[in-house]
Length: 118
Image 1 (cartoon, one colour):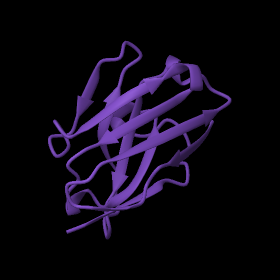
Image 2 (cartoon, rainbow, N blue to C red; image 1 turned 30 degrees about the vertical axis):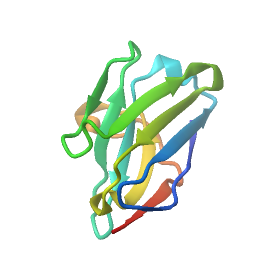
Image 3 (cartoon, rainbow, N blue to C red; image 1 turned 30 degrees about the horizontal axis):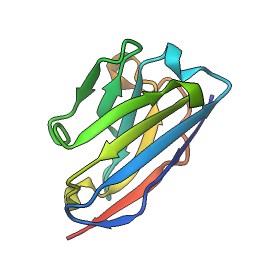
């Protein structure tokens, strides 16, 4: 599976962004999918949003109420709507299919950088 993330850019605190994740070879509707992020200087990528095949969603406390993960099945894409962005949201964002212990099931894509200025 090849994953490609897009939509990241520099935005001011309080602003909004919509990230997208496209996949080749696999039909994403058959998998639970998630958005991860890796902040500056951090070694691990944190799962912050997940959507099941039944469209149920879960969010990390740090983004709950501000971020929304959605599926776009006709286009085989996953999106992350991010509102009320904060400087702490600055990170590289990646999509993947969470496996055991939230470990990614597939190889990472290139990610997309979100920078939130204060």
